[in-house]
View 1: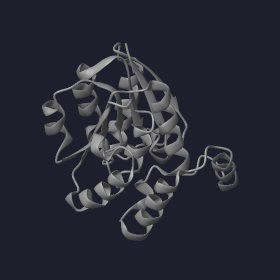
View 2: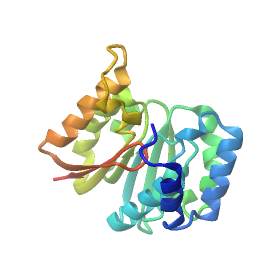
View 3: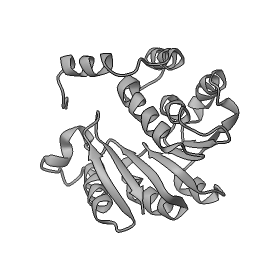
View 4: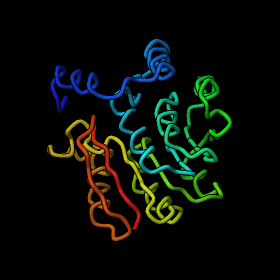
Length: 213
């Protein structure tokens, strides 16, 4: 589902900050060589992630779902000089692709790649977080949230991607559609959990901003 016309999306990109050259290269190579390039955050959402990170000025960032590393680099743009970004993915075949672009950036030594199941890795990361970006398997969004909240610093921000799920959240749900069912529960959880305050932004496929109280 397209929430905005192609003309409006083009206008929005044209009137937002230009995509940095390294990210433009990453974007192009992802579409040339990697399966499911639609998973890439892309120019506009990437600039949103960058802006939010610059406003938050995080020291510690956690990303669940690295893909080719585009969103990680956007989040690093606002990270403090002594900051660290931990990023988790299950696809071993993407590790070298990610690292190539991480090392071309100013933050290569500050980005820690984790390979494996996020539910196992998150408890083992011995730090707390200022900023978290969840963009992985939708079936575990609720599990990720409950693991993450106790590890958040006060006032920390949790960003959740794809929460509109191509508009399926307002359509009749197929009983076999586990992802949509979980996302509906997750969106309700974020809006009712007393530990956070939340706003859902209609950016791309839906981006929720939750602030830990």
